[in-house]
Length: 87
Image 1 (cartoon, one colour):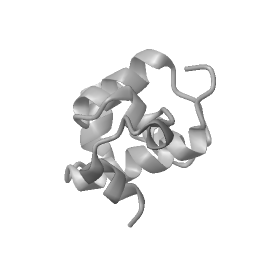
Image 2 (tube, rainbow, N blue to C red):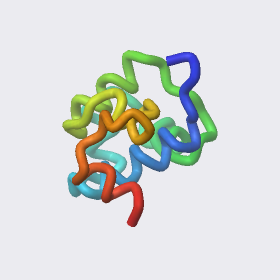
Image 3 (cartoon, helix red, strand yellow):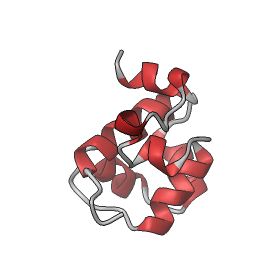
Image 4 (tube, rainbow, N blue to C red):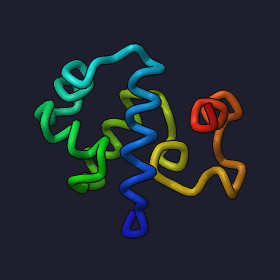
């Protein structure tokens, strides 16, 4: 997880959170972050540690590769999730 692209991660968190019809407040509460910290993560103004990234992935029902990895290149991402990132 050292090679995380935090701009891409934040964008994906926002896209998937909205797709799952969750507010920042709801997602932040479930994963144990403040709303401000989640907002900062979505805007790549702060970095999240592995446990929080894993918790967000679990809550959004995606794999770590789909959320934070380069799954697009390695075809490790479900087509329906990939489609969200290209809208």
